[in-house]
Length: 104
Image: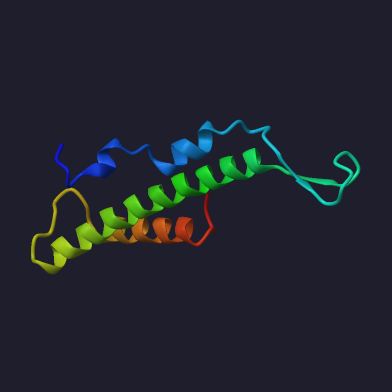
């Protein structure tokens, strides 16, 4: 690793969010009486939801990149024998559906 790759030492954000206990809450004191005037926010649950969404977006991104690479190779005249055009179109539609939330 070089000093140009500091991200190699960083923990991915989704892992940091998942490391927060799901039952963690933050209390916000609404007035001088701590017990009677506190609003509790489910920070742990929200962190786990955010981590799941980040993982989903990374998966969608990887699928779209795969399809775009195939289409780019076709444009360059390098039609791959491993995948035909209808299947690539099917993959593209599936990735788009996942990206737009129509499919999980």
